[in-house]
Amino acid sequence: MKEVIDTVGRRKTSVARVFMTPGKGRVIINKLPVEEYFRDEVKRLHALRPLVLTEKTEDFDIKVNVKGGGLSGQSGAVSLGIARALTEFDEAARAVLKQERLLTRDPRMVERKKFGRKKARKSFQFSKR
Image (cartoon, rainbow, N blue to C red; front, side, top):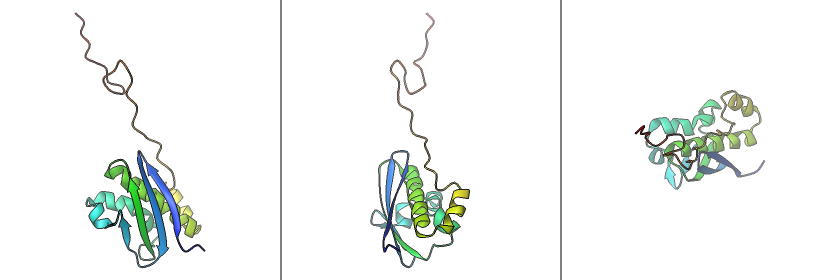
């Protein structure tokens, strides 16, 4: 088994590089504890969901470098990265994570703005006369 498991998770425009080592359950994101980085409890729970489902919250120390996007996309990227690292460590966790759809990269991205329109789909105001 490798000493350090490194994986990548992506969501929207966020990219999270996850480094997982056997340890005491510390999670550090961009040199901050997870409680400080994701102050919103919902985003924190979303990011750490793979650890909770596999009941390995106290088994690993996790360091994450995440960049791009907002906090919502970043929490999704961290979640995918942690899920991938857990499956690399233990294949038995794969079934649980796959059932909860935590190993699937969410393909939804922001739709590009089209010319002749105000936004991606919104048109300019139409004036009949």
